[in-house]
Image 1 (cartoon, rainbow, N blue to C red):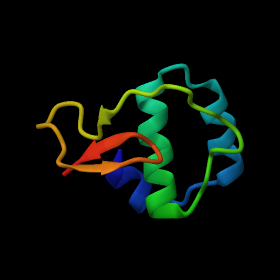
Image 2 (spheres, one colour):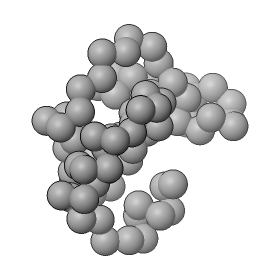
Image 3 (cartoon, helix red, strand yellow):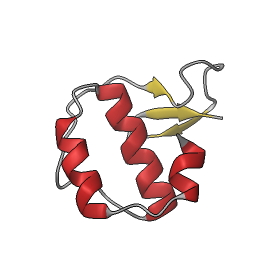
Length: 76
């Protein structure tokens, strides 16, 4: 997911439409984090997350040591 977002041109309008359709909170948190970090696209005006739990950025890796409090993500 990281490489795809970094190496492609992202259309902000389309990403906002897709984000509205995503029902998986973990996926939505990761997407919002990546788009904000790499493309300066903020989706918080389109989709709000009221989940208070932290997720690991890499679901298959070790628990992250760093924390992004805004998106409640743990990463290495």
